[in-house]
Amino acid sequence: MRVRFAPSPTGHLHIGGARTALFNWLLARRLGGTFVLRIEDTDQARSTREYEVEILKALRWLGLDWDEGPEVGGPFGPYRQMERLDHYDPFIERMLAEGMAYRCTCTAERVEQGRQALAAAGEKPMYDRTCREAGHGPDCGEHVVRIKAPLHGVTTFQDHVRGEVVTQNAELDDFVIRRSSGLPPYNFVVVIDDIEMGIDLIVRGEDHVNNTPKQVLIYQALGLKVPQFAHAPLILGPDGSRLSKRHGATSVHAYQEEGYLAEALVNYLVRLGWSHGDQEIFSLLDLVGAFDLEGITKAGGRWDVDKLRWLNQVWMKRIEPEDLARRARPFLVAAGAAPEALDDRLVPAVLTVRERAWTLVELAQAARFYFVEDEAVGFDAAAVDKHLKPAVAPLLDGLLAVLGGVEDWSIPGLEAAVNAWVEAQGIKLGKVAQPVRVSLTGQGTGPGLFEMLAAIGKDTALRRIAAGRDRAAAAG
RNA sequence: GACCCCUUCGUCUAACGGUCAGGACACCGGGUUUUCAUCCCGGCAACACGGGUUCGAUUCCCGUAGGGGUCACCA
Image (cartoon, rainbow, N blue to C red; front, side):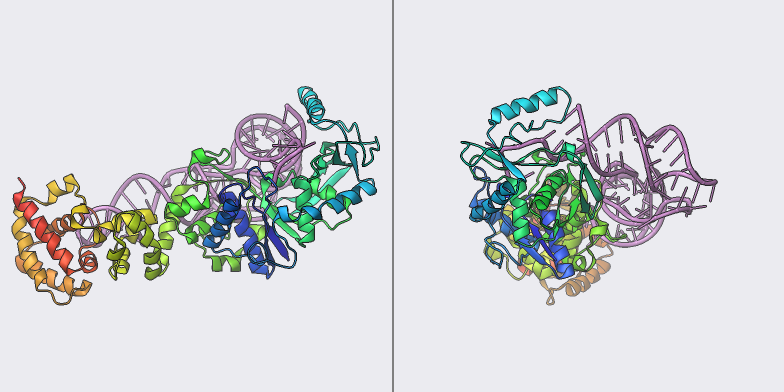
């Protein structure tokens, strides 16, 4: 079984494209097939090599690799359409020779006029087939080549999501298969590439269903085996309309920068348009064992960031602490932490904030107090007013004395020492916890007291609590 | 406009003629707790509408409405 993902390098990898790639990759991995990556770069005006590199990076970031394609090669290359331009003409000549296509000398303007006239009459805009029987030869001057589409009957194909899809041939146009420039357009090129690359199952977005019968016509005209299809529903914006920038981020790259984990994005993407019983959490490995075409939904799905955020936290809690720390590092630096400050306190620190953050950006924001200079902590005025009053100064002094004597600066060690002191003082832990929290973090909310003390280290803890004591004493 | 497709809680979805229509996110309560969060428990909430077919329709068929897609010498 051979499947493919064929992005056009005219922009970042779109989340819709990412899901298509994911579906194809999963199918290949699940069934022991081959996943081919092909770059559709014939739109020379908009395609760039930078975007191509960007797309490859995004795919790898998601955890998707390809068996054949750019950078890895393969027996059916080249895998960029611009490098395959000489592959198409022989097929077109063959269709011409066999009377399955014809040369058309109508100008674009004239064809367009005809279309508008039909549209005005309430009919489907199509080419009027003026040249269909004209018998123009190779020397007819500037011309395009059009397919000689059947006028009657139906064209059918099998779709794993929609079942049998039937189209009235009367609805099909004598569309162009070779431009006057000599280059064939998309609908022709895909067919030839898919054939030459041995693709036997095409999984793509629903926006291609209406192109499929045209492509089937080409397969048939050439006497080639028509592959199987599966058209996945589209991803819609939160309001149900076509997803666009106005709905927020639409590229994989953007979500990466917003601090989403690849695991979460993959999990969210796959569940939007596919399900497997009541299961919500899927790793790539789980999916390789569970993904199937039957589970794909028919209706388009709306993008729901809240669910993505939830999944992101789920995955931040699932991956190894060291791994989370490693991925959080650049976000911490962006939040103002000096790279050299991200020492062995990083892992314990990240562990104290991951259940209070839903993205790596938020994680970094919540953990930055561990790693920035004291002056850069930033105090919340309301929290300071509420918890650092003169009355707490003696309490903090007492605690400082206790903490100064703690040998075992660990969560259990701190817990034992502080609890004993609190009990002896006859006060509630909450009485000191909040003043300490504000002293360390500048905020009224944050990680648990002991894990926070343990992670921040003795020196910084004592220094900031002392400063908090001073601030409290000076208040009022 | 023509053609194609789609339609279950606000959102993602389960159901494949007979279920109190299930799960998850979000939301609202409660519990745990040193704050917040996590976590646990509970709650709210849906078969778009109208006709058929059938002993029986969310499920099958036909309309209507709404939404999406496609109609290029773009991909």
